[in-house]
Image (cartoon, rainbow, N blue to C red; front, top):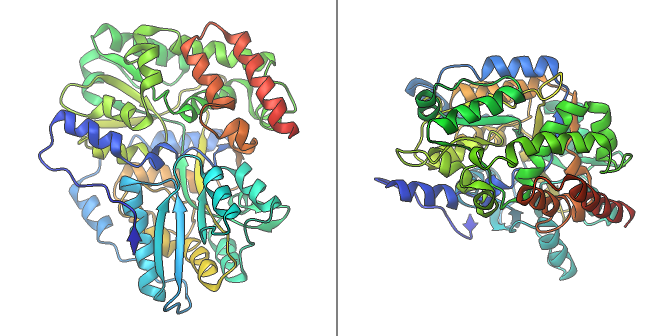
Length: 478
């Protein structure tokens, strides 16, 4: 398999090396933002709360998972001599792990697969390739809005019968629907994530005497307790605007509830609605307090997602105590030289309203060429065989119901995966990912830019709401 670049392995690293390594981790890990949905909450939250309380993984768990055989459940055609190009936002560790999936496909079919990182703006990358008459065979999209745009433009091809059979067999109906447009299946959600998690440095918490919070009020209280101990509490990767949309969406879902969440997602209500005012006011309790943000507001705006994790876990003396984001943070924790379950632990995003939020994410594979090889790769990605290759390495959560949970390398990931599977069809898709990409999915514009402006000046709530509404109205009318 031909890959454009690889992330090096680091040994004997210094604290500075650890932070650089975490910063270099796949920006794709930082971009695991799309394909998100809000799971309906009560039973799922209970499962997550219980399962995330499992003790850290032991060596026996890691060894048995890492050597687990890859299942052989799907028959693929021979594709000797055929070439495929696959594009995704993944680099570094995520690219390395995905390359193992593609290598397994090559081994089974005889095809030759090359991987090309797309950069952060997948929509622009694919658009330029389509315009030039050289689209990749397969693209891993992060936004359902982009999938719908591509399907409406007929850039992507429907999934063939073999792939559809795998989807029906292995995925809940809700995940199948997310990959469909006007009733036609186009995408396979290969990689999923739980995006309602807060990760913390156990040493910083122990030193401050802090405890895992269950409510937003308790989160702020514990953050102040950590601040009083001399550690800056919350690391925010504000240079990547998508992290800020995740903060807002978790608060809004918990506070305003699913019905209002649905309406805001489709722009049935305006961004000047009082429910948005209330959510931003709540978020300002954190973003507006310089003592609670690692390196303050300006520092947060300069911090990319991988750096936000490194600040929390790299080196012996943490610069932060907590960082918010999805289960893919586990890969960044490892790159920072910390051990999940010992140095790093995780708790669910706390309840802001009556119920705590649970937001999921994912990457959906689509075909831009209707070839035998492209369809075979979609079929493979829809099978538990492909999911197992990456899952046993860590850093992947799968919505594939047929993937053996024992494949995951530690109890934390197994718990997150089990909660996702138990949610079944009961979820909603993330609002920014349902929006047109110009509003919900591009750097330096739309929601990403507006929330960065909000982080810079959390007092300007009404101005930010007007900016959001102006941008949303334009994007939804285009």
